[in-house]
Length: 56
Image 1 (cartoon, rainbow, N blue to C red):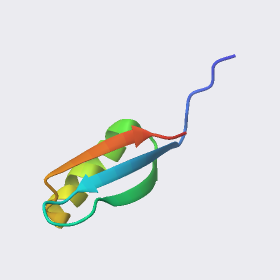
Image 2 (image 1 turned 45 degrees about the horizontal axis):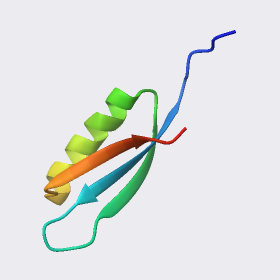
Image 3 (image 1 turned 90 degrees about the vertical axis):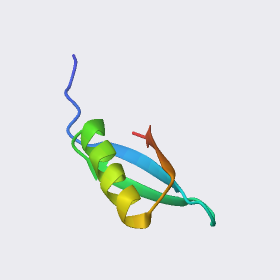
Image 4 (image 1 turned 180 degrees about the horizontal axis):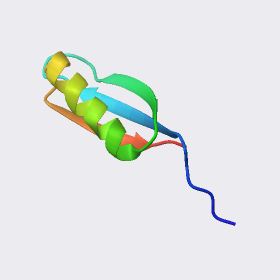
């Protein structure tokens, strides 16, 4: 039986130019939404890059 995933746990790592990376764990209803959260937060933190990893 296949069940649709209702919540996604994602780990987002933000890379800064002059400091250590910052990590954030988010619970969303899709990986696409986690990516949108990452873009918004990266802009706010002025991160040079970020990565989104599916955890569970």
